[in-house]
Length: 332
Image 1 (tube, rainbow, N blue to C red):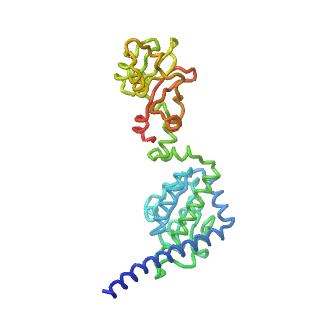
Image 2 (tube, rainbow, N blue to C red; image 1 turned 180 degrees about the vertical axis):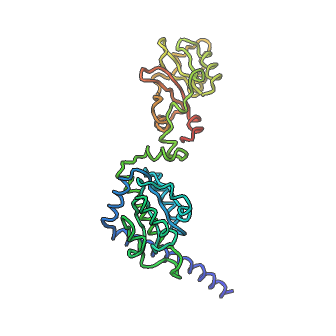
Image 3 (cartoon, rainbow, N blue to C red; image 1 turned 60 degrees about the vertical axis):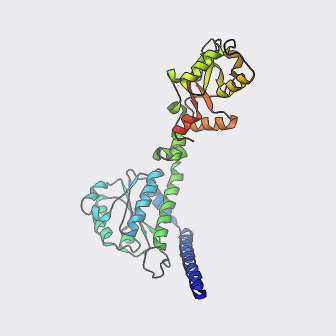
């Protein structure tokens, strides 16, 4: 039993130790990559900024998988890009590349047959090539317009065979390109949201109040001169938990909510004799339809309310919304 426990302890320690060594090796290689960045990186950035077409990323094997991610990151951060499989390129996909494009080719050895096969036609097309390789003297690197050095002193694989640190270095270099280009282009959160409309950031930055507010007959409204009973009927019909109270000019003079109703009942008020102007909450919080829906959330949280009136620049009532509307729009 004692020996069994010792083996269990050893078997638990060895994986953790190996995992830490892998992470430390990869971290060291990325750090070394950062320290040797030179003018070639600046030249690659300028080449892409001047690109009139798209960035075409290509690579085979593990480098191809990294290339997929680099293309996706570029595309989502303001640099139109797509991945092209080099083997498919030799069978017609080269037709997707034009002289106005820039090609980023990944190969640690720089001698991948599938990549070398498309170098001559790429040269004829006239698309400049940025190579990301661990071999400065390789055929790919020598043929490239700009060479980005992604060599590593060792792989994290104990056998020294599986691409590990080398693919991490290439991926990190691709991220550095994407983020630098993002900054150079002045790419904003709003731009990012346009490329990610299905994500939470997209919803927060793209959904406006006018997209989620109740409009027309769906807005609960009652004149200030009407009775509280009439106001309660309007609230019940529209099911928004409140009603806007309008003055004689049709502008929002106040709001009456479920909370106001509870307080009115507690005071023993006569719903038939009481007018809406006597129980409404004056100077209600409002928002304009052009504002972001997330601004409505912030207002509700700031004032501990669950409903807002929507008014135009002339304070005319044009809509209403509550927290449930924002939840349904997945803004919250």
